[in-house]
Image (tube, rainbow, N blue to C red; front, side, top):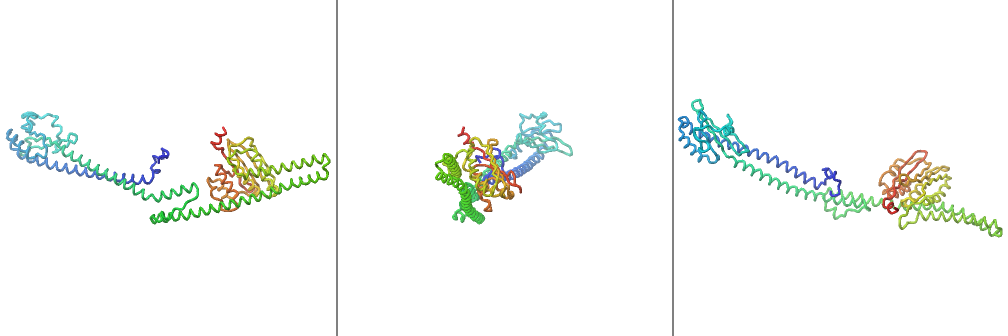
Length: 489
């Protein structure tokens, strides 16, 4: 995707399949792992809280059962002794300190006498963490659990137990489980993404083979996929490659037949031109022989000599121009040359015999005054075929119009006839981009196929300006090439 448009590179629809499938696998794995991790952590947290609740209840139950008689009597030393013994018994709870108060809220004893002296009232900041009606309050931010148990005796409260326990070990356990799950899931996602990428690459190998052959086909002759490659594929791609080879062989045969038909059409066009030129050459030759006879019989007379020489010169000039026009149309240049006004006017001499044969009126308008930076030979060939098709389409005693000009820097040539109009499929064929690589279905359209092929080679455009029962106008538009304009500059 290195040469792609930056905007299209952000569109997931343009990403290659070998990237999208592993990415989809990774996204699904991440989603599944996130759900599983969340459920595992939620269940772990629930189990830890239940375990803490059970352990705290056991601690408070045992402590309250031992403390109620001592608190009722106000025996401080017995309370201290009970707290010391409970510390060893419930070591797994990680109790930081425990306070026992009387009914008035004064501290009878504490596991940490230096911090909570006896016969004092506990600070409000300490008691603020305890909520009435709740036995265990968790504060995960401080990794602390606050325990509260009233001490009842004969339907009255004689004191309370306040305790603070460290739950850092529980939170660390959660963190360790989360870290283990994340690392395991990331590793599995990475491994599965790589496996998916390799699997997709292997599955996409036949598609790459097909794409390579299609790219080669766009640049020239279509090559068949070798049988050794076809037989190694799965049944689906084996059938696909087989059908592609059948199609490729048919296209190659059609292309070969198209070239043969084009050559035949070219020979036929040359035959029509040759017969017309023979007629055009015979006319001045007849006049030249008459002039020679006059010179032989009356060569001594000055006026006869002048008239005969003028006729000979006119006839030879006409033959020279006709031969020059023919050579310019059918001689391959070593390098493309620019189109000139004379190149287009010479076509009038080549079309004139066909126009005379059908008694057509040839209306010629050439507004080209300077050289145009387009290849002269293919433009002449395309325009000549358009003119010959116009002559063939027009009825006898009709007219054929030619108009060449420059519009917006481009060469524009209109050729009009008085025929019955173009069929819809031929009009669509002429105006469709890239259609010149395939000939028309009907052989009568090969002349137009030659025009279309030449037009595609020049990056030109054909436009059917008019097509009706009263006639057809076809416009050829050729833009000068940028490199040629720079060379000319």
